[in-house]
Image 1 (cartoon, rainbow, N blue to C red):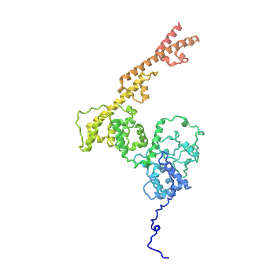
Image 2 (tube, rainbow, N blue to C red):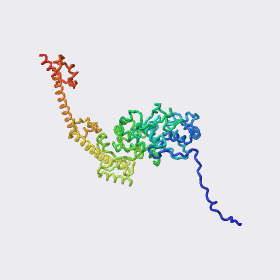
Image 3 (cartoon, rainbow, N blue to C red):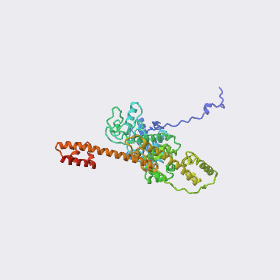
Image 4 (cartoon, rainbow, N blue to C red):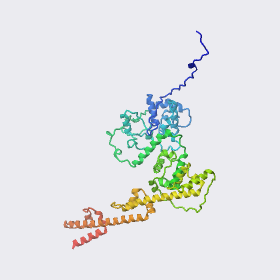
Length: 528
């Protein structure tokens, strides 16, 4: 049989398929990736070790240490000592932003061939969150989450959210996170050589707890102080963790400085000190953050976002939200500045782009309601209002003044409505001005600044009420003295103030001069 060697079999010419090399460790998928309950890196290490039927300490010593050992930079994982490999200094930071977490992620991604393990830590936010105040020093957990997962036959793990220091409650059960074992009453680290998610590292006890059989705990039944703020904190942290894989690139350090500049312009027209006072921060702190010398820790950043009614995701994406009416009335009354009589446009650039900006600024002067400089700058594609000021200082000053006057008018109308409602309401007893201020969160000075006449009327009405109550108290004290004095005299007891005080329903009334005069007259009549 003749064979035609010129005919090529197409199977022989087919390019060999690429077969990726298998990973050394299991390609274990993290739990909850892209959600607020994504697991932490320390939890992933413990689960990965359990999947290979070894202890986490063995996994770290035999697999992780040879990889990170090639890097001679100083870090807690690069040590010849097995104890220091998973010692306290290392474990406390493995879910954070330091080099130990970075190298552990690097080693695990090599061993498992995964590319998403950085989202189990705070590494995506390393440039905007300082190390100080970021993570808890010991493990924290929600016993009810553990128990629910066990009852529903779900995987037991520890979410990254529980490791963050500002997170104090569970966003599902609205209960305090626990940090001490209910069996041995000891705290323990996030990861150790014998870690097992859901169990104490000291005594091995189960950390879950059912609602029905939970031990008596005052914190379980007491109302959590600042509950709404605690819920907001844990939810905004959860949103931040969930959005981490969606961010196109990690936010740079300058993000905090840029967004603070924009908000300072919007809220206090560039007055950094006034903005800091409104937030309840020291002048030293706000100036350092505003200038970019330092960045606020996570707790202070959450405080700023809560006051601005925004979340961390929008804050780090440079999304500026408009002022709410509640924020507007809580701002301090700005000092009036004298405006120059110069009406000519002063421009620093005569380019066509600058001319278009000036035209937009001139049109904005006719808008109702008037926009702020920050809103107009964002509308025109600028990050801060300084670009508008560079085109025309006079127009920028005019727009800022017009917006400030509009804010003042809104604030005046809102405060006037509050005071008039309190003045003409049927509430009894009539509230004092101080009580109205405490109820609404607006300062007394702000009330008097905007509506001095209405404030004076409320004060006079409350003063008349106090006089009326005082008069009734005096009359009641005189009646009690007359009744008790005759009874005590009949029993042979001298009706002195000391003796009367033991039997009077309201003994404090004996301090009133009118009541003492009545008592003196009664004793004089009885002695005759």
